[in-house]
Every structure is written in C-alpha cells, then in structure tokens.
Length: 86
Image (cartoon, rainbow, N blue to C red):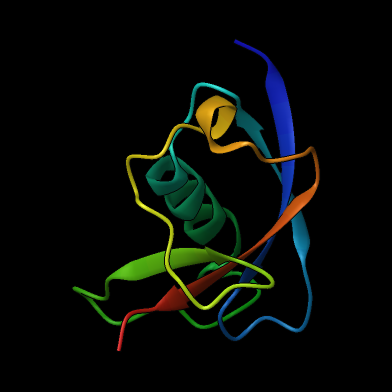
C-alpha cells in the first residue's frame, strides 16, 4: 500500500483540498475521509442520510464507490468533485 494524494472539492467548499489516501482505498473511502475532514468544519454538515458521490473534475459521471484507487488509473493529485446525490 502506498500514499496517494488526491485533490477533492466537497460540495459547498470554495476550493480543492489535498486528501491523503492509500492506493488501496476505494472511492467510497475517499468520500468518507473528505467529508470527515471538511464537512462540519469548512462547510456546513450535510443532513442526516445524505448520499455523497464522487466524479472526476472533468466528468459528469459518478465514480463507483467500490473502485480501488490503484485500479482507477488516477494520477497523483487527480481532481475529484464530491457532491450530494440529488
């Protein structure tokens, strides 16, 4: 397992933050880590039961939550947008 930095924008935040993940983590893990580090701190907490999704910065399609970072073909500092599912 190796350290794998990603830059994530959590819905409601003004910019991207570096999130240090492990290349064995899943996209779901990255969503959880980002929300734990930023939600309720830099942005208002999401209402109970809110489902968060992630997508690549230049894509509209959500990433599968069980997608493993090392299998995703991401580059270090890949930009992800994390948002509440409508």
